[in-house]
Length: 87
Image (cartoon, rainbow, N blue to C red; front, side, top):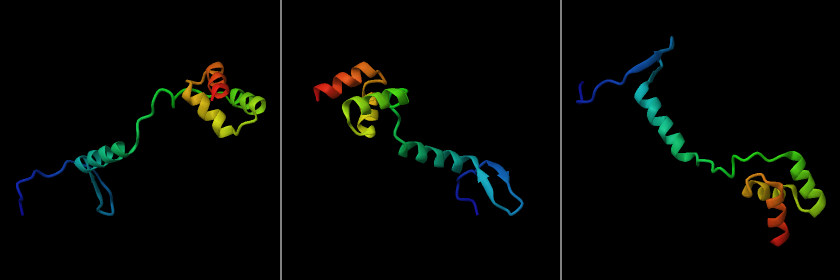
């Protein structure tokens, strides 16, 4: 039965009969990528463990707050400390 649509390009067929089509894989990938939020440059900044430890020990704040402050300030310790002291 032909419904007017072309057949999907089959990438591989397994011995049990299952097939993966290029069209379905690309569609699934687009759906997954739409769900995953893109990371901002702030989130990709490296946070050094010793910087987090310093903030936690000196200011007595939870580790999660120290990590958040460093991420929001691009991993720069001085900026993170200033932001925490001002807030």
